[in-house]
View 1 (cartoon, rainbow over the protein chains, first blue to last red):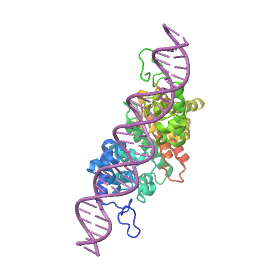
View 2 (tube, rainbow over the protein chains, first blue to last red):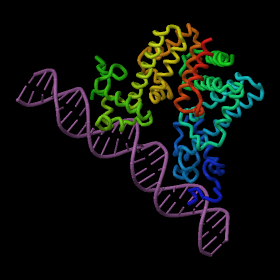
View 3 (tube, helix red, strand yellow):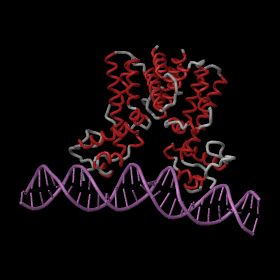
Length: 186
Length: 186
DNA sequence: CCTTGATGGCTAACGGCGTTAGCTATAATG
DNA sequence: CATTATAGCTAACGCCGTTAGCCATCAAGG
């Protein structure tokens, strides 16, 4: 009955560090999502890929959402890292950070959608992760929060419309991207 | 057996004009979505609201997606109308059109999400509807397609992040909106 | 007037989904 | 050696979209 949290030690409580097996499960879930999209992430398909049955997953996570939260956290973490790297290479350049953001999102479209198209489970996310993801952009905007939010909106709108194939067929999205980022800088 | 299309007259074939009963169904579906979100739109909940059983819906629509397509078409149509009205009142003003777009989206958040967060079923949509929705913005950009796409990306990114509550709690989103639209104009 | 066929309901059921209850084998611990 | 925690299992529930097949109503035609 160690499924429930224990008061004293809280050994591998959900949301905190994961057990090795839980990490394997998250890894398999991520592969599934990146390959086939979040709709194909099913407790049964996930279990299949691990060679077990669906109910066994509940020994490691309380529900499906808890697995998804791990994937969302991964996306935020990696996206933050990508932006931080861009910042390190071209300090203060909003354009460099935006480019890194777009490149990451387009490299992981299904994961990006998963992390982005549902209410953020803030309470279940590591403390400060959301802020960390936003920080490089805010710094590049020299603390102008409104500009940072506008830039984020443009970047997100661009990549999510791109991912959904909403733009006309032959459109030069790289050009639209440049136009947008440059308009927001000056 | 008139469920299938008939060759000669094609009386009320799907996608074309709807029968009165089908229109009632779409109306109920819309109410459901606007009240509770697209996740709550269920063939059973929809039937309930109409006082019938779920399988009866299949006398009027081939599947659930066909009902959703009608809602998506409504959203595109109404959004286009809102932008056209703004255009008529302030010809050539990108800001006016953008404001109308945002106002419409925020007035119908669940419908906007439904129409926006899944691959567009282009083949099932009335001809020209997608273009019509884009047209006011393109006109306001004086035919600069790249600018129009950048502006659309900003507007969509802004409202969808707003709808999902992604921005920090106290943020002045009206100010961010103004900053973004104005940056994209000059 | 009676038949025919279309219309639009219905019930029963299927397979897939997330999830729960309860069993069990193995491994670690006293 | 006995106990207990771990991590698997099967069976099942309720909800989902959807299909098959039945039946009442009603208009049109002989």
